[in-house]
Image 1 (cartoon, rainbow, N blue to C red):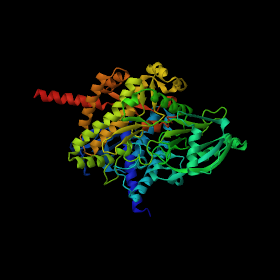
Image 2 (image 1 turned 120 degrees about the horizontal axis):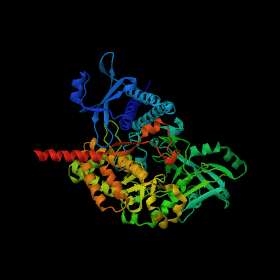
Image 3 (image 1 turned 90 degrees about the vertical axis):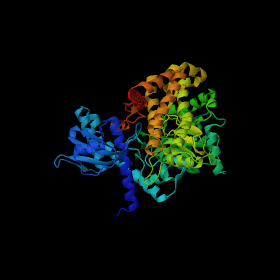
Image 4 (image 1 turned 45 degrees about the vertical axis):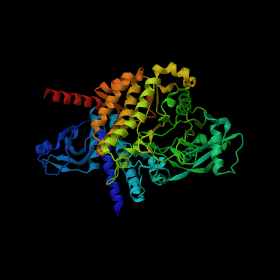
Length: 611
């Protein structure tokens, strides 16, 4: 018999999967028909009790079906929250309650049929993959939620860096399969899934130096850093001069041992598998970057697991990008001029080179551990801060604002506005300035964005991720004159039109808007106030900027539609972003909330004046 806790966890996971999917669908496929509740109920002669203010109705023409949802929270910029789901029964000529997972499968079926009608049999054949991943993601999420409900450990506002990293029970707020982990068996999740807080030792390979490639911008080489780390926990460990030790995620180590080229290198004595050694690590939110509170470095590995859209593999150009960008950021004075803005660098790497192979699977990226024990409290990625809370709980952002409000004896609304202003100044504004001054745009989405909120208000913003650098081709000569080694990473330079789309999505859609939306959904402050303040700030920046940031900000304020990464369609078409040309997912356009808000404000002003 399914126990009570498991039942509750499944209900929560089903609802979270449903919310993410519907929000994707109405942005990427069909925006549906929004109606005020009273009108809709009168029109439809509804007998079911609907308590919310709006209804959303979707037509599925190919299946000749209509479905509707009551809307518990309608966001101006972010994720709507939906209540009961209904399906129209033509036989009985009435609306009936429908199960959430059934609704999802009906919508996927519509997508599948649309693919067939459009004459895209290649696309329509992949809907089974989407269903498989949705179910797998839902079941994985239920497992994590059940564990969290039983754990009872409070993830409050003063959580440490790693507690926040491991608290993402629902995953990406706009992804149809946020907890898809293809390639990781259930029994492996206990150790390697961040949500289950497992710890493990890294597995090591002793490799002949003549096939090792490494680089470091630090005083110590990558090999020295590894040896120093290992001898800290195993002082008697001995190494010869002609070998290097390469750490590996246990899942990747097992995969490597099955590869023919590795077996041959072991037989030739070039590689020796040493097994599990050294300090214990735990997974951060990305799964493949691992952390130990007493170690100088985090490590980012390739792992044989498909997470959300992609098989997670470190590419050779990413290894170089970490080194080159660390050098570049050290040479420009941007970080000195913006002390509340920091970039967590990836200052070293190691790999093993084999003939005729771009990547061998041994690629390891070293990431500076800027949050060691004693410096890790109140460090929280934005994704954890704005995550939907479990039922009967409050979001981490709400808890934070409430705590400040009680200590300052001020209203939740005034604290919220002040908090948002400080957040904008240390996160959003420096990201825009970096692009304006140097043509460097960062993939600053909510999971790559970490805040120090140990004193309540944000004091420092940290950016992480060496897959997320976009350098403007317009600034190429200037950047090359500052850091000539950028010649080795030509793939970091992009056309500004593409940068504008990516930067718009990551900075606004995936970082700023979720923060605004969370404030609104938690009834801390009206989204309109934060949106209006953001518009005013963008106008000021547009006047001040002199580089390409000026055109970018102008577009954000003026364009009727903004670029949006279509995770549902990317998933439906089974696109692996890391394999696609320019690592490009499917992008679409959605109405620009800045323009809509501005038009609404102008209309309100005009009507007020006319009276």
